[in-house]
Image 1 (cartoon, rainbow, N blue to C red):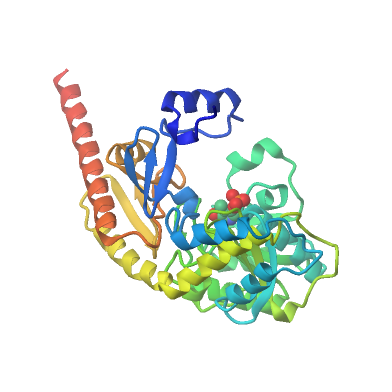
Image 2 (cartoon, rainbow, N blue to C red):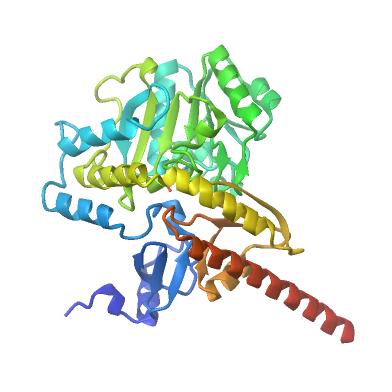
Length: 410
Ligand SMILES: *Cc1c(COP(=O)(O)O)cnc(C)c1O
């Protein structure tokens, strides 16, 4: 009676989603129905190399056998279990995950998304410091719940929902003097991405992050690094803060953490202590299903050396992209397998051209094409991505010159 989703026709899928959609997303006219490794298939059976990975969620690729097995086994063992009791999967995950967090980042709050992690970190910072203000950076993105949104920069996300939470301020990214200026005796935390994702793949300068750390320490302010996008091996280290040799007071995680199962976490320094019972919580936080999936992610990432792999492949990807000679490219930036190609024009037509060539990529802002391939992507597949990019760019230049010529003729 009910056909499984991948047997539905594309038109049928689009019609049903359009009938009920919130309207919040501008969608491309394809329906993805299956994935394996770095490849996804649409409802018409067409294959794509996936450099969107659901905004970096599928870091181990799609349907990694160990993540799939962990979910299957746990689904048949125990799925619902509140934090009012202990649980084997949760206990093991906390221990195994914090084996990889730097310094004394050992205390863990588990939740279900990046925004929830940021939201919790803001509350915890207020609690630990008994202060109220938070300083974030221009172009920063931290999620869309009211607290996280208050730290997010983009007016397009903020303006429809004003007024937001009071006490939030934005200072120019990579400007230490501006940050110092903005600190008050009420500043609870500085909240930043050390590599900005949604904001356009912008890297913090090492001196800036180290200076932030020193300033925060000197002023009794907590340094919260939002690694929802950069965490879990994406940038070539387990956590991007490690590139800077800086130990944050709190880390926010999400996206890749659950191997596709919704999962978020805040991890903070042992030195800050624990929180009193009941002041925060989450019904689904630390559920055994998500924890089992996340344990598989941590295990595979460690065993297969995926952060190191991301570093190695990322260097090659950056070099190959930089070798593309196109007048449309302004800059190629990134670290590990988090890469942005900034264009001298809007990114949308190029994203469409890449899709036509079998590569799915994402925008980051209006002019940056962002690539977040799975960390398990094969080198030949990355070569195909670079080729598709080079061809799409050269087609776009040819079309531009062609239309320029015909305008002159006309
Ligand atoms: C995606 C993202 C978030 C929000 O995560 P959600 O799971 O969408 O709530 C927060 N911070 C950063 C840096 C992100 O990239």
